[in-house]
Image (cartoon, rainbow, N blue to C red; front, side, top):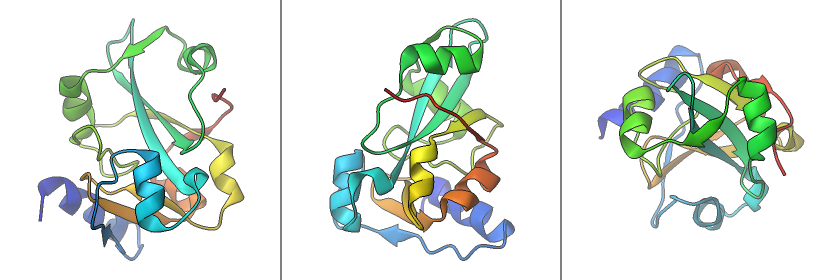
Length: 156
């Protein structure tokens, strides 16, 4: 089992949740792939989108419904700084995850995060679990609680 997957399972267990991580037959790198693998609608996929704060240099997490896109202006206003593309090295250093498997929980370093209210329309959503082939079903409320994300309007 990968270190990333272990961290996600540990974060869930420490929070009192059953670590019901699912290993998929195919890739879950994109929201469309994850929805197809999970057998759900695309908006039930909780995407972890990472940007780089241009002033702070830190990684910032936007957890959004799979069919939504992050609006750069709205996200920048929430972050209080211009946002740019986060490279793989920053994402790995801040979260401990590789692109395509960034979970909303189990990060190696604290991260400022925001949450798309669209996800709250579902009883269960599916999030990356640390690898491009693992997802975890969670309630939107549990993602909010464990990620420390703030609900906000930041999508197109």
